[in-house]
Image (cartoon, rainbow, N blue to C red; front, side, top):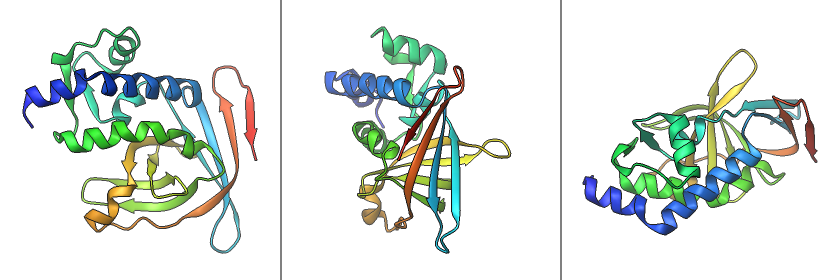
Length: 192
């Protein structure tokens, strides 16, 4: 990808607006949370998937690398003070980056009872233990094992484009309850 086209894309006001609003949603909804999704597996056993979210994950979620680091990216984006020369797309492909940024608008779908849990997802670019996917084929958040009982978010996927690539994403299991635990305050919010 040419540096000029990437910089022009990032500097575009719609792109910056999407990044800022996505960051606000991420911080308001996911930051310092452990979100536990409850569902029944194919033989009707109760299951739970706990996912931890940390502040440095937003930059990775959208597929960007900032040479000043994740914390500086977070602060500079908030202050509208990004140094575009320090930004690069993780995958080197502006189309992947565009898809990830476009998917930010659909993030609320993965914290509603309309989301689903899918076991083990593998492509040539990504191996995930779980996907938390939207009911409609829009987006998914992939997760990997973090410690013995928790997963961390790895990537944001545009699953509407999977038909083009030939990778099929399973329907998954309906989520019937979500518990948000604030890791700093201990406050709990239940969605059922």
